[in-house]
Amino acid sequence: MRPHKKYMELCLKLAEKGKGATSPNPLVGAILVKRGAIVGKGWHKKCGEDHAEVMAIKQAGIKANNATLYVNLEPCSHWGRTPPCTESIIQAGIREVIVGCEDPNPKVSGHLELKSRGLKTKIGILDDECRRINETYLKYMKTKKPFVIVKAAMSLDGKIATKTGHSKYITGTEARKHVHQLRSELDAIMVGSNTVMKDDPMLTTRLVKGKNPIKIVVDSKLKLNLNSNVVKNEPSKLIVATTNLAPRTKVKQLQQKGVKIIEMPADNGHVDLKKLMKELGNHEITSIMIEGGAELNSHAIKSNIVDKLLFFLSPGLIGDGLSALGDMGITKVDKSIKLKNVTHTKIGKDLLIEGYL
Image 1 (cartoon, rainbow, N blue to C red):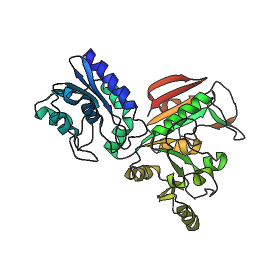
Image 2: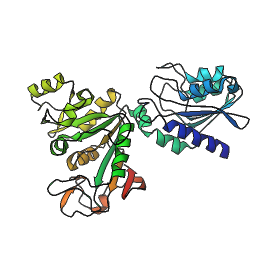
Image 3: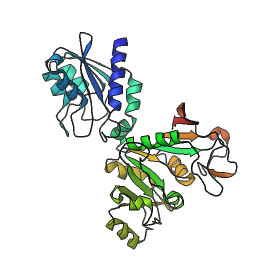
Image 4: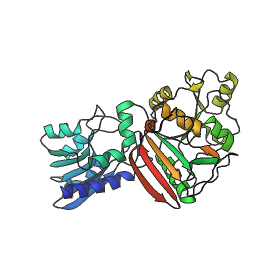
């Protein structure tokens, strides 16, 4: 079992190279091993390009014959943007396939397909790790809704801004670079109209090398300033989610600039976030990081659309100020929301707490 784990860890490292480029496809790495030596490596570089298994087979050439293939996600067995990997595996003469975790895509049955064609197969090596690296893909494939993260940067006493609204910068440069790196790996960033009006954010990845995400502004009454940074910079990458309370003239003005407007039913005067997630999923948006204020953060959690929380804690104290979450309707401590699988990481002078809902 140990060599299997060692090789699967290498697959995961290769898979990470595709972060930010493969959506809506998963992150996949593959290696070919023959007589204890690695003869081919591959990873999925970009949606529409060769899958990891095919890349590894091409690198190995004739050495792929009678080799063992390791791959962190079940190989595809259907025609999509590319041919099925199972056919390439069989044609290459590979004798055994070791798979990290199952692909929930109903069109994919690579493990069973290969087994029925006479290849030795094994599935479930480093299953948890393989699922974690593709947590956004796995949720999207099961639900057709995006994986949602709520991110907040706060002082040690839980404040995201002073009572005057000043918030730049609570965390240090290293933490902010980490956030920009995450932005480059995700499909979209979401904020509320209040955040845009108060902070006029760029929502870019300017502190790191990487693509800028799609920007989503939740704005039930369409108060968005046409001269705000999110509108002026790459308006074609801006989605504004609003309701029938939006002025028609403002809708047309934004559309003329190239902004996509999604009109959702109002939920007590707010954009219905559950229905919005379904609509965004229809647009192949598989992952979203919410970087809003207390109102949007709490609304998202209460709407049960959030999968993961990222809270950056700085060592500073603010006292009276703005909190990361608004009213959650919780009146007793024993009714508080408990996070699962909580981890913590030191990033510069700050502490990142991660957990799942």
